[in-house]
Length: 125
Image (cartoon, rainbow, N blue to C red; front, top):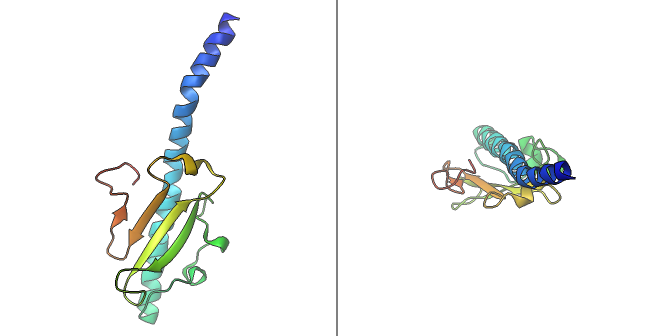
């Protein structure tokens, strides 16, 4: 009975830490999706002279999910409009463990390379 008690206490301590490590490692799914989408937007701009919000033209998976399916990726116009700027958002997909990733459920990248949450103030990036 003592062994069961010790094992259960260890599991209670280790499991939350393990799950946070899983969430941390899956954040790279959002980072890759944001970077790849930005590269595709720049390629599209080079060919067409404008950016696009049509994710099908950017090589994103159906439903605009990230490669690992942990984030929903959306593209919107930046401050000066979609013709000359963009704003990409990766939001933790419902039903994934990423929705519990405190402070890092939404990551963004814009046409100026600005990222949120601020990489100097958080470890999301």
